[in-house]
Image: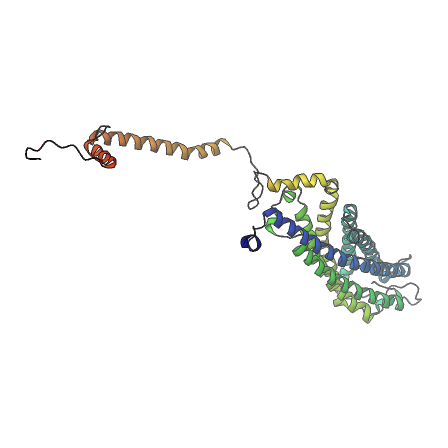
Length: 378
């Protein structure tokens, strides 16, 4: 029985899919643990940054405001919206990534809060755009920590936070750079190993009917692009805050990076809203998901080309489809007429047993062919 121990049957397609699904689940769990850690870290950094920004708003926004205070107040106000949105987003993502199972409502909340954060970042970046036209002449200092600070009697980004607040903001910027680099790596890992962003995934019934896999891949890939923009934005802010110097070039670069990053972040957060908010009930109903996934094994489904979408043919298309059949039938009829005419002109023997057939039959039976009597035969 050597064959029983050394020869085995190949795994079926169902078994292979189960093994791949199990491995994909393991990779998803590891990615979720890493994301949970960085979500909590970024939420903490956002809280610190939000508190520091509120301090700056208290210093720069009370009326009446001159040109310096107005500029600082606009930037601080826009950044506050970004901090609040980012904090809500990271807390919602932590609620999902740190849980044992998928939290659809938390992802939906993260998508909505992320859109708020992206719009706040765009607003702050637009306020900083004044730096791209050169240093405004009404500014009386190059120190970011006191620009527009109304608590300083001589009116000597965030802006006007004071020396201590500016130092805190420098640390926040460094923390955000580190967190966004990690988030970028995690997003790329999820796109490749967890959500399997490839053509075969997009041919699945879940994607054809609901578009969920495409939305999740958009979250991963679009998120990676947005995280790159965030890294650039906070690096430019590090130049400003950690030196406590109003570097016009750095502010201009930060303005462009913030606007671009905010616009890019709308894409993944919008995809998260589509996946978790628009399909909220479906994702909470395992029975519906199982019924849709069962289409993988349906007779009319081709896993290579995907689901076909039959439609009613137009009259011209029906005629075009029937034309080859009509031409084939006409050719067969013409060939038949030609064969009939050839048969008439050719001497074809009538059906029956010929002499050669009789001879072959007798040989098979072991008998000789009957001969006429020979007069000298003994």
